[in-house]
Length: 167
Image (tube, rainbow, N blue to C red; front, side):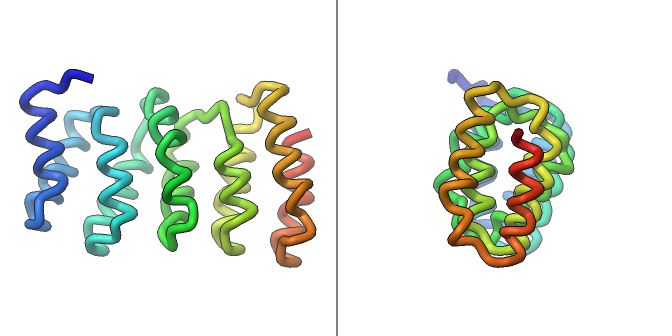
């Protein structure tokens, strides 16, 4: 994707070692938007810079409405699924109401994450279940059912709800 000079500068500022420059770039993205920065924002969020930056990035994701962002998010989410910050990020995504039409990665996060992460993933999956194709629905059910014996008691109870949502 060919980026304008202004977009290139925002990306450069996002990666600045100066926290204030990064925060300013996040605020600029909030006012101007841009799916072009989603991958960079995720990388910065999960690199665990500072609490203030994490809060601002999650806030930005909560306010996203551009459905094009879902594709970029999903294609980058797998590399962060074991991060301790994934639960807050999933929560921000379901609050954003970005429509996701493929939920396999979220089901994998449900299975592999801790109880809190599983709960957040379930909420996002419930919100987006109507968007699933039959094939995607089958894949999601297969992931849950194949790993259900490995789940904690709490997650097994959530898995019952998840299976009902995916049927």
